[in-house]
Length: 395
Ligand SMILES: Cc1cc2nc3c(=O)[nH]c(=O)nc-3n(C[C@H](O)[C@H](O)[C@H](O)COP(=O)(O)OP(=O)(O)OC[C@H]3O[C@@H](n4cnc5c(N)ncnc54)[C@H](O)[C@@H]3O)c2cc1C
Image: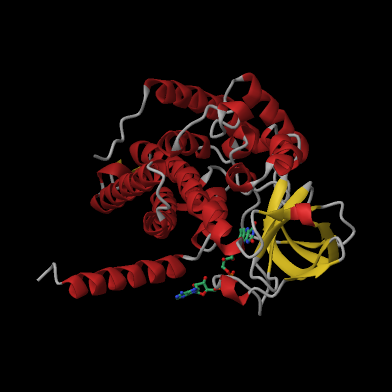
């Protein structure tokens, strides 16, 4: 039986997060004017307030200072945090730190936990995840990985170029994917390593991720054996550990942002009149409102469904692909419809929609573009049907 009942303690936490987002995170958006990510001082101030409110890093285990939420509880809370653009960084549940904490929690050994996970979980440092490479390297197709890790005396030498590395500027360490003679491997690299450098910050439509997005270079970057995260040659397997939940948590947060866009459009449709009646009484506006209601509800159900699979301890690859492919497109449709309903106000800085549009657009590309997920979904469907034909169970 699939169970979506929200426990009382999660409901109570949701109320506190909702109040924090309304009273603290959304008003702070006025101060958030940096080009490449939220200013470090603003992020720190918001995190101090989130700690005081007892809502900091709620997804983490209680040993790491969180609320020990399961994935369904996380879905409820992250949607609420995502209602404000600064909710996720304030609550320390934004990418890439959130995904990195999850990966480290599952894979890191005792020393790595002490050195990397504990300070990251406390919010004392930031991290980044270095996988994507500029052409002709790995993007949607991870097998095109060009970064190399060679065995040297006492450890490894990593060389390669990565781009769109969110949060690289100002991070204390990165998790880097590089190919080795034994296959793709993940390494923990301190950013004070002389073999690592941030080459440039990339202008992008979004600007809410702390540190922005950077092109980075690993040049004869020397690390010891203890830098290997998990096993040598296990990089792609661990990438799945990170990516399936991480793409789902993106869905949760952006669903909150889509709900905010929709609420703004609903308020406008009720208050603005044209042709002698409120916009909300015009049929084509009503159709857009209904379509967005359906997109929001369907997105939430796909997220909860995948969260439930993950809570059963299953990898949920198919479910997370379906959620990512659907939610990225659906939340984009919601914000686009909201803008259309609001007319010129929608594309102005007088409301939140223009910024939400810029922040949400890249979600259709990162953590696998929609097409890559649709492709994977259809391949699984074809395989499933082929297996059914083989066993001839289905006529
Ligand atoms: C804002 C942002 C933040 C990011 N942060 C990080 C980060 O922190 N760390 C990191 O490692 N990476 C990060 N990325 C990179 C992101 O994961 C890649 O952009 C993504 O995997 C796609 O790779 P690509 O851009 O090279 O596109 P390409 O691989 O060049 O693909 C281009 C397009 O081809 C089409 N396509 C791809 N596959 C298929 C298919 N199977 N069938 C049909 N069409 C297809 C899609 O339309 C796709 O958009 C970030 C990207 C963005 C935009």
